[in-house]
Length: 150
Image (cartoon, rainbow, N blue to C red):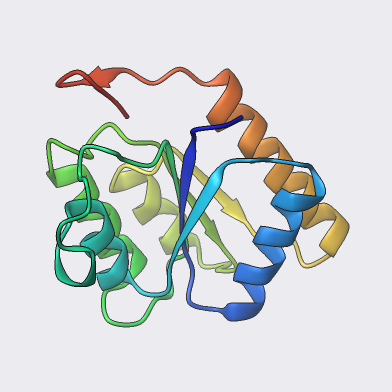
């Protein structure tokens, strides 16, 4: 779908490349903004730091959030997203290689909409990304918040 934005919060360059390839392979035309650490993700969302002056009214329709991030970890990013009125309803999918049960529990406790372990196999990963896009950007309906679709 056009005019939909995904914020991919991922520090591993190989996983960024893999995700972008998976989206391209299925002709998913969403704009993908990549944040390589938790601070950059929050700066992007709230128009601060390197993203000062960005139209903060133009928000992504989906956040794909890794957990093990430099500067600010994924759980803290999730907590801050949920604590702010501008982003509290935004769909956040944790996309991680973590196999730790506590990460799963904490992810849902702090408000993740979904928790997906990254498949190791490329074809499985491509299919997972396709299904994520289909569900979260096409089928799922999000409420408007202060007149802005989130």
